[in-house]
Image (cartoon, rainbow, N blue to C red; front, top):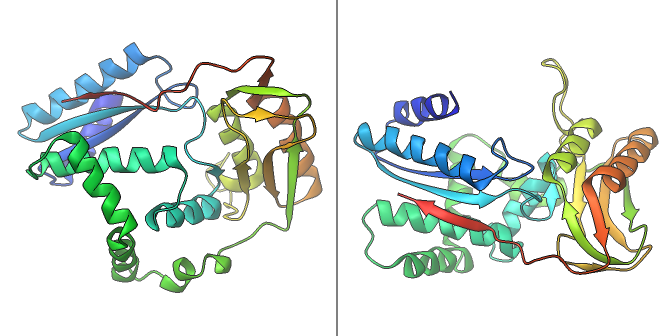
Length: 257
């Protein structure tokens, strides 16, 4: 059902080459690599049978990608990436997906060379210029992206502090997402109004060493009540601090063609 739902939309769009980002982990529909690989193979097969050039990148979503969760906060981070100085995991995924699109589009070169080309376009400003053109062409207010200070900002910004010293062993993407929704950043009912200002900015991620009392993240909240509940849920359900460092995280598990 997931494969047919997604691919019907992709095929209807008219694209002749499609790159899919298939997430796996606690924050994804597919929680293990075998399930995600099966889904990716189904979707790639559907596309190829319909005459499309296809690739699926299977990427990790146990912890949030980048440092931000929330509408305006994520837009600010995307602007940073397009200027070539965003978080490395976010940037790595962007250049991997762009490199695959270049390959399917017939650009000569190895995967590594095409990813390097995509990274150059971030650093030389061409990716930002194209984003600017896209916003203008759709009638958007380019002043909001030229000066992110114009974007909505939450009235309260407070940290959630590490309860002890050690290493961040777990940072559950699903729990951080639920906190952002509870703050007002997503809909719990169809007619809910979305607050574009709220969310969470991550200070510490899996593998980072932390000291007791150090900020693990910053909560952008609309009021004191929801701030307190967000802090409680993040410390109780999202973060886990261990006495020893965890295994290194893998961002890109595999690419299925």
